[in-house]
Image (cartoon, rainbow, N blue to C red; front, side, top):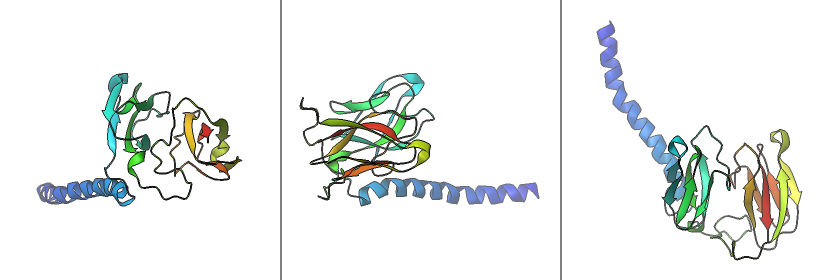
Length: 181
């Protein structure tokens, strides 16, 4: 009986591996379907070491892989020609500027929009306490950008934070400082 079970497991193993690969491919294809030209770039800090990974455009964290929280400006950030991670942050990133703009002020696809040109906009804090949705009302003329995450919970634009012309919203425990323009 045990020998028959082993044959069954070995016969089923290729199908299981193919299903896992298909699920992984679906995950990557989702970003292409959403308008990104390239799939995510995996960047990993192994043994706490700093790693830099090439990516064209402003990096957006789309999936955290590590048990260590990846906090922008703390253990990951934008580099000249890519993204850097350190102190155990392992995540997948996409290039924000590679996504076509929808023109609806939701912050997606803005390729930087003049960030880092020396002129700062208004900085506000917005906190999701007890994982509850919170709206921070502020007039936004051009854009909002996360500049410093203060929570252990990941702040991922479009998932746990976003914006429109009337302000910034946060959810799922995301707490951060945002630059408003």
